[in-house]
Image (tube, rainbow, N blue to C red; front, side, top):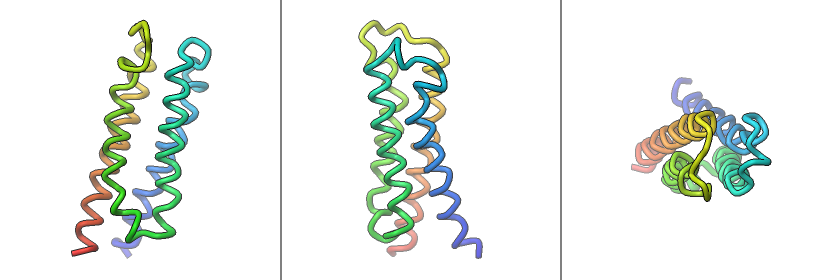
Length: 120
């Protein structure tokens, strides 16, 4: 029972993190001031959400793509300073992307460990 609920928990938290990353420009109110960062967060959030939705349908195959979550998480952390042209973003944007990026990166690491444990 514990082994069956662990991937479901990881996928559920990954889904919530992806949805939050996608809607964060409107939650934190930077959609109008930073349009490039808005597009970036929307695309990254939808990518994480699609990975979270696809994993339960084909767990053996999708766990192999879990390393991409770590890349997406690192990009979410770095994107406020890289994407914005003026490099002056509010602390709320930085905190939001950093916390979401760390969560996605950690979930990617957990998924990679689960994938290596089940395929061995």
